[in-house]
Image (cartoon, rainbow, N blue to C red; front, side, top):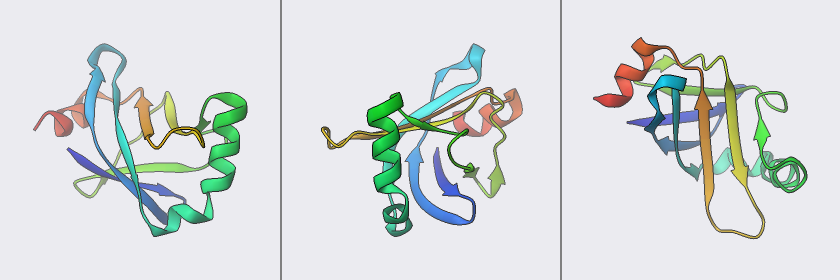
Length: 104
C-alpha cells in the first residue's frame, strides 16, 4: 500500500509499504523522495551517518495512507546514507486497524 510521507506539512516522498512485523505493528519500504525532500536531505543524511537514521525525535514525520494519518507510537525512522543510493523508511507501533489498510 502506497503512503505519502510528510515532515510537518511538507510532502517529502512516498513509500510502498509492506508489513515487516505484524506483532510489533511494523511497516517499511523503500522511500522515494519528492521535491520538498531537498529541504531536509542534508540534515537527514547527517543524522543517518551519526545515529544510523533520522527519526521521530528529530522531525515531525507523518504517514498518510488512503487519506488517513497513521499514528505509529513506536516512531518513524528514515535512513538516507550518502554512501548508498537506497533510502528506507519504517515505522513501528501501528494499531491493528491501520495495519489492515496495508494488507489490502
